[in-house]
Image (cartoon, rainbow, N blue to C red; front, top):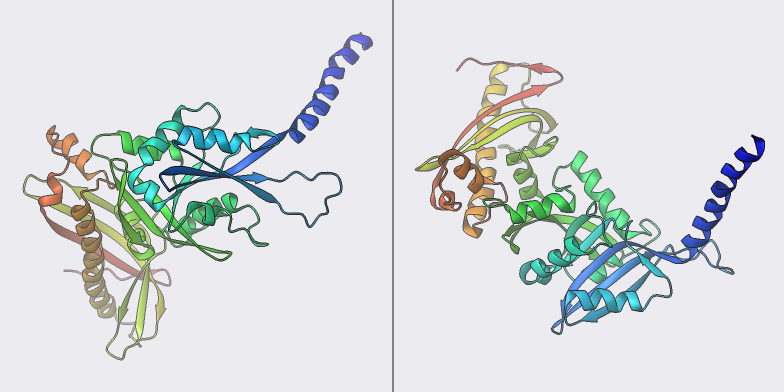
Length: 358
């Protein structure tokens, strides 16, 4: 019996050694950048470095392999052929597309990414405001593995300022393939070794048609009911001071109609900054502020929706909602319609909400 147990344990120990040795033979790819230059696709791999004999603890955490090809398949193949280890794509966290790829060549890239057996579709995707290679290679001591850092930026921003669109690649592809829907992707910019989230790109079919800054992106997430907490709106007072409110709970519905589009929103907010000198012991103060901020919120929503109308993007799935209601495949009817707003804002300060009769 003891011999039998020992025989069962031996493969476990041997398997551990095998996996360890096998790991040294793999080039673990964490991120991929895709550019289009000089009529060729250019692919860059961010590879996690495994220390070799003689390397010090100060050695770089990553290295980069770049190659080009007439099409996306050849670009990937040529980059893989430059490596002295077996490319391992199971841990890819981020794929970055340059803006011109997102505008003109995204369908080719997505077709390859979803067909290849090398990649799991659990990664995230983003747009680089500049060359994708430059963004992916902007490593520093603060973010040695850029692909991981980009995902962390999305996650952090999603939980705080709500300008990020934190969605895995599979949902992005589903949005592009579904009638009446379009995709959104976050936009990053690299300045030297500094990386920042600069906004959100929206698509029509497989083409990037519009970009929104971070403030506009947060409004899109509000309209989309996408983890909407701490979205800020500000107002300048008569004394040139400011007051800022932060939405902490909201529900927005975009209702299709034959003649117009109606946006309804119930928003609860708190005052996050105030230098105007309002009397917050007076309930009328809240009534006045709620009325003024309802106008501000409506203006910001309208600006975003008009830009979506101009670009004919169904990034908010409005076209699909028309089909679900009327069973008519006019997915762009709403882009020609007027928009009405019904916004109900309640401002809460220090846990107290003043309900005012209208």
